[in-house]
Length: 632
Image (cartoon, rainbow, N blue to C red; front, top):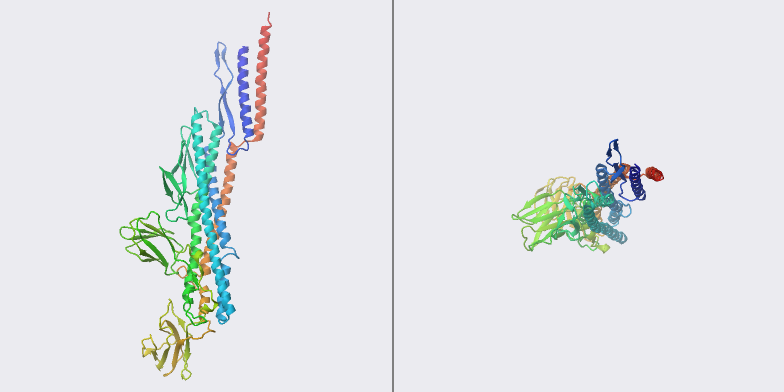
C-alpha cells in the first residue's frame, strides 16, 4: 500500500509543480504584448481495480491551454484596424486643415490685399506708388499660391514615403508570420498540445499586420493560419509568403502605388483595395482628399489668372499701350502612360474657367476614337476625333498617332497654383484705363447722355476698337453711325438705355436726343487719370466666375476650406470613437486573456500548499514503509 501512496504523492507533486511553473510563466509575462494567460488542464489517472474496489492512482497533466476567445480577438482586431485607419486619416487631414485654414498663411488674406491694392489704383490711377503696391500685392498673392502648392506637394511626397515604409513593414511581418506557421506546424504534434507561446507571438504579429492593412486570419486544421489582405489577396498561406511592392504609378511617375507580386510580376492594386489600417487610410486620403484639395486650389489659381488677364487686356496702361497678361501659369499637365505604343502627343488647354471642375481625366484611345473618363465620378464620354472640350478643358492631338489602348492622364488644375507667377513687373504697365472715351457734342440741343462705354469680352477686342466713331441723330428715334469697321449704318432705331455695340465696345445713350445731336467714341489717348478698367478688375473679386458661375474666387477657396475642415472634424470624431471601441474591446479581451497578478498570487499559494500536501503524503508513505522494515 505504501507504493500506492508514494505514486499518489509523486503525481500530486508533479501536478503542483506544473501549476507553479505555469503560474510563474503568467506572472513573468504579465506585461508581454499579446500574451494570453495560460492554465494547466489535469485529470484523474485511470483507477486500479481490486477486489476491494477501484483505487485512484493520482493525477495527470493533460495539456497547458491559453485563455482565448476567437470572438473577442476578432472584435479587438476589427476595432484596432479601424482605429488605425481613422487615426492615420485624421493626422493627414489635420496637415491640410492647418495649411488652408490658417488666417495668416492661407490664401484669403493675400486675395483681399491684392484686390484692395487694385481698388487703390482704380481711385488713384496716376499714382505710381499705388501701382507699385498692386504689383507687390500680386507677387505676394502668387507666392502664396506657390507656397500652398508646395505644401501640398510635400504632403504628396510624404504619403509616397509612408506607403513605401508601410509596405516594407507589411512584408517583414508577413515573413515572420510565415516562419512561425512553419515552426508551429513542426512542433504541434496533436491539436490538444498547442504551442501557446508561439501562437501568442503569431497572433501579435497578425495584430500588427491588421493595424497596417486590415487583414483577415483564417485558421487551418493543421494549426497554421492563412492571412488575407485587401479585397482577398493571399499574403500568407501556411509557411509560404506573398509580398507587396511599393511601385511607381503607370499614369503618374511621381505617385507611389501598392502592387501585388505574382510570379515575378507586380500587379498594381487600386486605392479602394485596402479599406482598413493605416495603408488604407493613406491611399484613401490621397485619392479622395489630397488630390481634391490640390485641384481645388489650382482651380482658383487658374480661374483668377484667366479672368484677371482677360479683363486686364481690355485696358490701357500709362503709356497708352494695350494691357497684357498680369499673371502666367503653365498649361494643364498631360501624362502619357509609360506603356503607350503610339507616338501621340496630347495637349490640353483651359478654355472656360467657369466650366472648369476639380476633376482629373483619363483619355484612352479606342478602336472607334477616344474615351474620356471624368475621374471624380467615373463618367465616360466617347468621341470620334480630337480636339474635344470637356468641362472647359480642350484636349487636342498635337502630333503623332495614338495606338488602341494608349492612355493619357490629364490634370487641368493640379499644377496651376504651383506654376502661377507674375507676368507684369512694371507698375506703368498696369492697364487701369479704358481704351475708349465718349464725348457729347457741345452744340447738342436734346437732353441725351452717353455712358463712359465698356470694352466687350472676350479679348482681344476688334481691331477697329480705337477707330473714332460718331453717332448722329437724324431724328428723335433714329441715328446714323460713321467710322471705320462699323459698316456706317444709317437709320438705326434708337432705344433709350439700350446697348449700342460696334468695334468691340458698347455704350448706352439715354434721355431724348434731338435731330442733329452728335455723340463721339474716340481712343482714350493720355488717359492717365482714368481708372475705369481698374474698377472692373476690382469688381472681379465679388463676381461669380468659377464653378459654373456660382462661386467667387474667395467662395471657391472657402468651399475647399469648409470641406477640408468638415472632413477633418469627421475623421477626428471617428478616430476618438474607434479609440473608445478599442479600449472597450481590450478590456473585454483582457478580462478573459489578461494576467491578473492578484489571482496568480493566490494560485501560487494554492499550488504551494498542494505541493506541500503531496510532499507530506510521500513523507507519511516513507514513515509507514520504515515501520514495516522495523518489524521483527
